[in-house]
Length: 89
Image 1 (cartoon, rainbow, N blue to C red):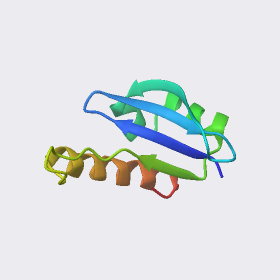
Image 2: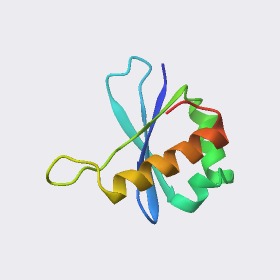
Image 3: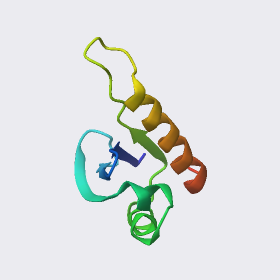
Image 4: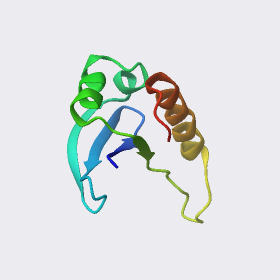
C-alpha cells in the first residue's frame, strides 16, 4: 500500500511517501498548507504521481504528551484534505 505522509504546519506542509512495502518513507516536496487544503494543482500533481491509498498526518503533542491546540488544528486540516481527496486519514 502506498501511504502519503503529511507534516502539516501553519504555513507549509512537508510531504513524504513510503515505498510499496511500507518500510521506508522518502521526502517528496514542501507545499504551502493553503495549496494542500484547497487541493490545488501542485498537490493534485503529487496525488497523481504517487497514487496513495492512505494519508498519514503527523500529530503534534505537548511536552506533557497531550493534544493541544496545534493537534486540534492538524486534525481539522487533515479531515478537510481527506474530504477533498476522498482518501482516508
